[in-house]
Image (cartoon, rainbow, N blue to C red):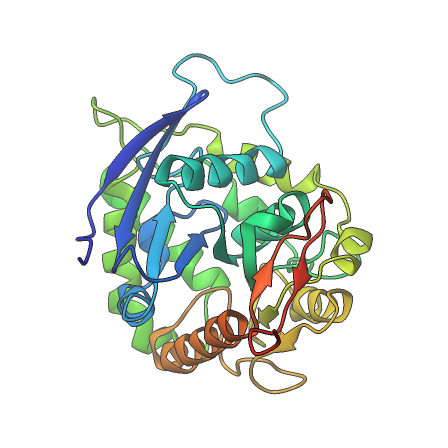
Length: 318
């Protein structure tokens, strides 16, 4: 039975989380985690449709994004951490009765995915880290001024807010494919804006972008912990990324034992910025699916009697 994609909700601690399911629940589950100031709709439908042919696709709005609601009262001054966001993802899997899933994260979602794999190794069948980084401040840095633009308060009128979102997409997205992506960026900006309003038509997440940036800055360097991961990993990054320099992706590949890299050895996905542009989406989808299939064929299970570890077993070995 194929699940029809629609917004669903679950309350987990102080989060009312919005999620969507695509594909057959009998297929291997894939959890998609999106990034800073982004929503589940920022996963291109073309990619979701390709994945759901052989996988059960789960995606959700992070706290402080889209239709997910985090705290109905005044948020605490210290905000939250990436580990809290990883816990949100785990609680969603718990709600769905899924013991483990392939984990795919983009941007901040890649950082959350890394933290999930580190903290909950038995829950992650494989890892795919897209346009992300290790937390080491010397790699994966943003171009000057980019972060300031991301956390800037948008205009209060709808058209001004939508244009502001489009301008951000243009700032960090692919330059090579900017003209081809223009109409899609506008459509996506309109959809993202409309999904970020409360019942009164006001922004539902004031200060949310700044809190998410705070979670990233407070996360620290994951390098040593990434060294200890033992799950199949694919790293994807583009050579035009203005938000997270490709050095962040290269460091991720270097630090996770056996991690694979998609695209050119030095440039990664040529022409890809901090986005998933349509012209290269087919290659990205094929790379992810190949990675998922290889991980499934290899066979993974948690080591019995241990905590915080996982082991690979060859499915062909008795």
